[in-house]
Image (tube, rainbow, N blue to C red; front, side, top):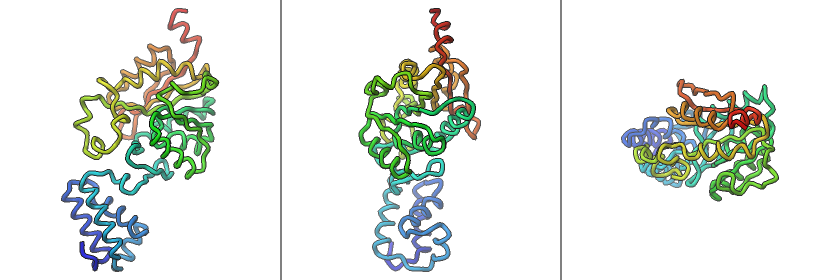
Length: 295
């Protein structure tokens, strides 16, 4: 890219390159990258489009385009993304928040209008988007748990940036959660790895080659983490507490069965905007659990 180009000319070249690279949203992506380079709004791209782009900006835009042509996720290039109207820092080592997960958060907030959900724990928190949004919008006492120190570094930074107080815990599922928290949570929530191992190699390269494998791989059938969390969650939930999961579109009936077999009641599925199963949740009632176990 020549240094003498205007913003509009550089932007057009960026669109053409990303289109040639097979990016479906090439117009949107080229614009976002240029907005970041020039610190402009989308309107500014067009009202100031005839202004020149500096050599430093041209070099940076060239780097951005090359990275995107190499399938590095747009969010990693920009170092941030938006989730439920809030900004989140992301990068290699942390799963990128997706709109599917907004259905999960919105579902918890909806249930909390009728049920007491004041204290929640997010298992496998990644960027921290779930507990941060629940603390921000639901004013909940929130805990975020993850096995990855790198992910927790992002989560802590995101909590500070969004001015919410979330307690972060490094733990492999529940293994390092302090014992004094047992039986105290109104809800446990998780968007665990749920992709079947054999499917991962067929994912789009942005996901397969860049996002953390341990945040994707759910074992042979994609259900390994669900089984573990369902089995252990009853020790951490209060009587009447709720368990919420994000799930793959084809896992709804399997998760309903797993939760009901474990003694959760009032289990329900919630669909996303495309009408696909996306969230499953149920309630822990110890009397019901005892009946299920014939105690």
